[in-house]
Image (cartoon, rainbow, N blue to C red; front, side, top):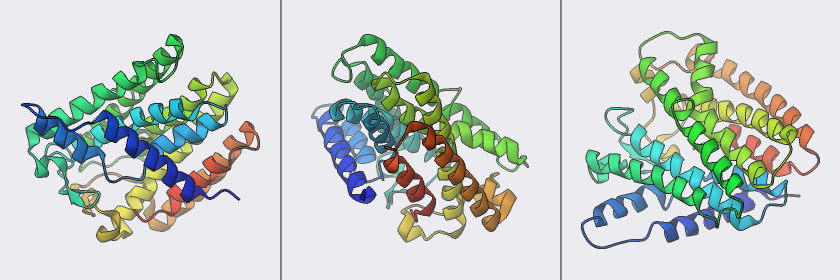
Amino acid sequence: MIDLRAQMATVAEEVEAALDRILPAVSGPQARLHEAMRYAMLGGGKRIRPFLVVAGADLFDVPRARAVRAGVAVELIHGYSLVHDDLPAMDDALTRRGRPSCHLQYDGATAVLVGDALQSLAFELLADPATHPDPEVRCALVRGLAEAAGAAGMCGGQMIDLLAEGRSLTLEQILELQRLKTGALFGFACEAGAILGNASAAAREALLGYAADLGLAFQIQDDLLDVTGDAEVTGKDLGRDAAAGKATVVALLGVDGSRRRLETLRQSAIAHLGRLGPRTDLLRGVFEFVISRSS
């Protein structure tokens, strides 16, 4: 039997060690920026996105070091998005992972620079031959992450989210918002392993289908925790969505209806994984973890 939590912990340790190496403490005028980058990225987080890269890569026998590097790149993009999301101009969050948000620990201007620098570092990492010797594979990784993080993905979803405050959205509009804001990066995380392994188009399609279900499930569970969670467990201030009048699946379907939607997504994800053969236990386990987590 696969011990999912042990394997997630192992990957999280590998990601943490890699981040520690590529985010060294420095002296001089830039020291404050580097210190804030380390503050934002080290010592916390579930590292689900890097784990998805590794789990997907394992299906195609990709060397672990390459998968971890690609996973770290995804985590850097995720980290930058959290720093910027927490800013007063965005979600105005006071805490992140049980600590003061980056802009409160340092200042708003530093937090903006932290996000900018983390984003640049992600693409620098993917473009390095150490990630993959084939330049075409590296270019595919760079392009895929850029699309997932940009206006057609995560940033576009965040814009819709900001515009939606205080407005009524249909379920379809909310799902589209969450597909972009959360699902796009999950999609790339799952597809990155297939890109590294030169997998077939059919395999990549199945992974993207699974990722779409997972990304939406992750966001619904996040929204459920914002309503029903414990701030001491989640490590962040709760109730912000309702206070801001944000449209969410939970606001529209209620807690029970949202949990039923999670089960529908679970069945769909299992069906997608069924197209990938017998080695998908880790990815199945990740879905169960995502919809049952308390933080």
